[in-house]
Image (tube, rainbow, N blue to C red):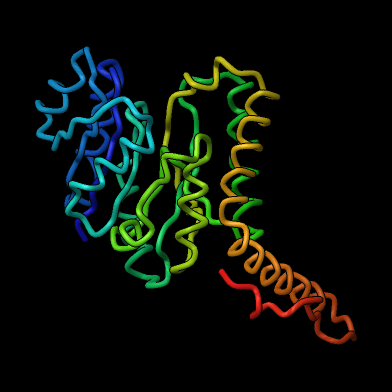
Length: 262
């Protein structure tokens, strides 16, 4: 399967080459690299050109717009969104492609992020971020972390990509909408990225920013989330009842699940 790796950029000359080297070293070779550039004034575009990446130019309208613009020119069966300050383990794309080929119901997902330049505070932020992502996924929310999101191209086109009107956590919004077409999963793989954005924030600001951003994304998709939440709560109670051999009637939701429309 052809995989289109889309990298939104704005003055990334210091980090882009490392990212591109990690992509070129992938064991899965059926890859196209798309740089979606927002009027960089440094050597970002020449570096991309030197590495034979496809380059598309757009205005400075944020990462969601940049990712959508890159996806517009993608030819791959899978879209994989990567930040310019990240680098990938050599077999990462191969594992993502393998998972999608094995599970026809898997439509999108993400992998874990580790900071390669952080201190203990950054490590705690990373744990908080993906602990919350894991909890969201267990409750039935789709989680597609922006720097590591992958999605089938056909599904991305159906849901019209990232929503630029969602100012924070547009990646969670993408995952929630993708769940209407199949599974969205967090794979047990890793991408390494820079902690530069988080170094400006303290723990409380980081938590509150992403907490309220997540609420915005979930509120936008309230009815689909409500039905999935009840279904997953139902399954959880059933697992607990079976595990402890409880001699009770099977758990029944207090409302009609089928009547809640996505």
